[in-house]
Length: 113
Length: 115
Image 1 (spheres, rainbow over the protein chains, first blue to last red):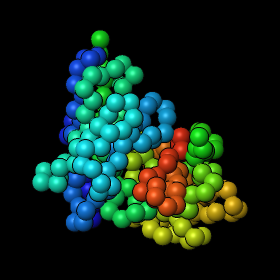
Image 2: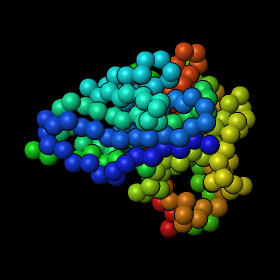
Image 3: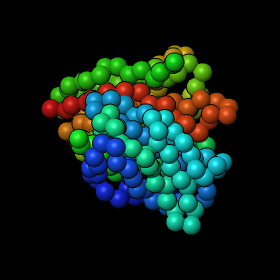
């Protein structure tokens, strides 16, 4: 069975600072990995995904993530935080195309002036 | 850009009542899903549906739950006799065919409140 661990339920950064949201996965087979963002009172929007191609994945809004098999990690980064990045971020894993997504517990990102 | 839509956005019901949550997936998508998110908790998988039958379900998806694709566009989740613990945000998702068949597209959710 697959699982995801997100370290840090709340992360606070200053505007313009580096954003780093951590995600570690567990999977017995090569995983598909995703980051979704949830703005207040909205649904889940795909930020980026890793599906066994390039290990450094670029997504929307300046976010990127690097798949590191040796560390079983898929951390999300953004060089410079913006106030509009404040949201809840979920890491998710699946192991077969079209199979269920297993989500982490989420990280709430706060961006301060 | 096509979107997954869900109705209603908020449903309030009494314990023991039946509710039907409705979703309209993106038109050419082939796989359909329901997830739920209890307030303050993570998003949990309920069920997946393909070719007019359930392809996978979680332990949460017991006999009180059912899904249906009654026509070519709607995908519904029915809870037969709601419990207080069914209060959650319910998300529908759909998956396209072909090269993009690894990305689920989510609707905005229906907030279900059971009193």
